[in-house]
Image (cartoon, rainbow over all chains, first blue to last red; front, side, top):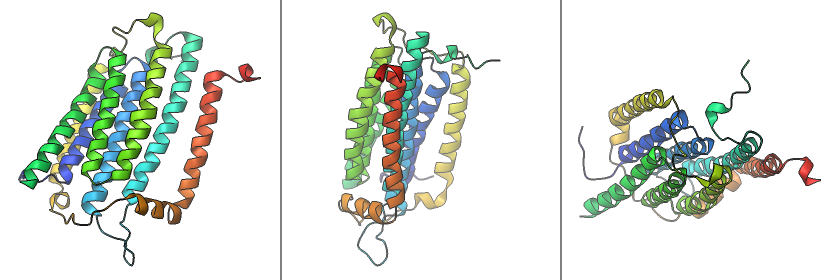
Length: 115
Length: 172
């Protein structure tokens, strides 16, 4: 294992893995539904870092026949951002709606699907 | 010298991102969590700049650092009971299990990252330049159908969020 000073793909992937695992911990362990949404955003950001890092370090070449760079990872990251924006809007609307009827945003108390 | 400088810049922003992400999940006050979340988004945008993704960095700052952070803060304010933010972001009884699971996930991911040989080769990073034109070229040729689907998804999500938060009967 040689750690050179040059920043490469593994360093970015490691940052992404750390963000993802903090997000995973938050999703599992938080009581407040808004905090769960925030942790989800952390996980989506980690995925975006990975997509762009792979695009930068493995696919950094033009499409053959053109001078356009091959940026599939960037386009995927944009779609992830679109879905994340939609998800956080609907999620917050759900939390606000639940809070209005139950006066609580605690995910441990959202148990009225219990049989 | 250039390697050391870019390595130091990467280290600063990576530490900023990871440390503020840690504070998001460890802070007891959910308002602090929301603010550190915005800081994490800014750090990620800086990492995008270091990866030569200028358009993505701008989108990250606008959408995440602007819109999503503000929306989260609004959600926090609308669901905070009696205005008391102390101890508003506590751990549930699953905290230990969550910590174990995420630590094991991190160990697995780290193992994969540092043992996959093709990912560690030095690559030619000479093909640089702005990415905006190439992203738009790709979006309007190869990915034009997903692009339209994403537009419809945003519209549906907006209508759904308004209906969910406002209620159907109130709007008549």
